[in-house]
Image (cartoon, rainbow, N blue to C red; front, side, top):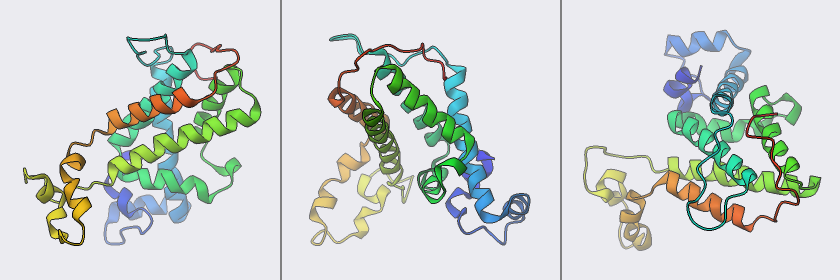
Length: 222
């Protein structure tokens, strides 16, 4: 279903009436909301599949400084799995980010709840209490999702154009009205989503409280 979402994800809230294939899929689901829920479920199912396939393979730890706590490494692994799926299905990301907020927690797709349980288990087994676990979970999810959304917002206007301003279409903005935005064009063109996400996640984890136990269950989902 994610393949269909890639083709129609950016139109998923307003189904293409003129296209028979998405409408056929629409009729096979419980209406428009059922289609959206199916796409979200497929997305997080792929994230979980990646995690289970590579169970036990923690993300590479830094080569310098103190060894990375195992719970840090597992959060990195989860972030990389989510990022890889988001990169493969970019048009689904806005739906993935917003649809779960529109339904009660208990009615969210099972793969999303399973991933949430996985993250919570990482934090609980590191020794954090309930309040701290919720705070850390929210910070982690907000950073990863926010990075992916920011990474995906720079839609290329002309892929064949070598000049960054022309490629992003920013030459259409008056320089006098948007001098700072125009000045940042080269930086925007050099934006590395993976590097930005990893650097920010390292900074976020470095500011998290020290885990009381630093025990970890081995990388496999509970």
